[in-house]
Image (cartoon, rainbow, N blue to C red):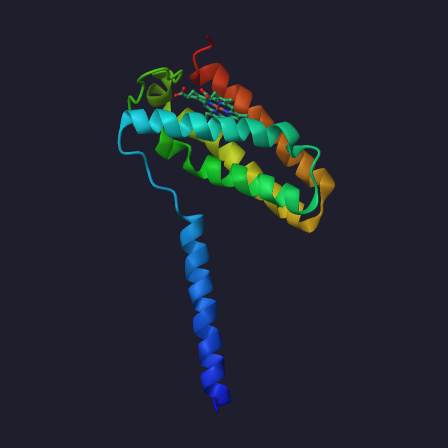
Length: 152
Ligand code: HEC
C-alpha cells in the first residue's frame, strides 16, 4: 500500500510534468531560420490576426480568452518574424521596418500590452475593458500597415 507521502510526491511529480509541458507548449515558437521562412511565418500569423480580430469584439467568456491569448502570442513574436532585410518573394514588408525598428517595436508593444490587458479583462468578465483592448489592438494593425507594409 502506498504511504500518504508517496502519493503526495507522485501527485506533485504529475503536476510538475503538466506544468513543464504547459510551459513548453506556450513557448513552442521557433524563430525562422531563413528569410523565406520568416515571410511565410509572418504572413500566416497576420492572417490569423485578421481572422481573430474580425470576431474578437463579439466574443465573451472562454472564446474571448482564447482570442486574446492568440493575439498575445502573435504580438509577442512579431519582432522575431522580421529578421533584418527579410524581404523576399511576395513579401509586402517595407525596408522602413529596419530603418525605424524602434518605432515598429513600439507599435508591437502597444498591441502586446493591450492583448495582455484584454486577456485579463476576458478572464475577469470585464466587457468594457475587453472592448477597449480590442479597439486598441485594432488600431495597431492599421498604424503598422500604413507605415511598414506596401500598399499594393
Ligand atoms: C508592427 C507591425 C504590424 C502589426 C502590429 C500588424 N501587422 Fe499585419 N502586416 C505587417 C506587415 C509588415 C505585413 C507584410 C508582411 C509580409 O508580406 O512580409 C503584414 C501583413 C498582414 C496581412 C497580409 C498577410 C498575407 O497573407 O500576406 C494581414 C491580413 C494582416 N497583416 C493583418 C493584421 C491584423 C488584423 C493586425 C492586427 C491585429 C496586424 N496585421 C498587425 C505589419 C503589422
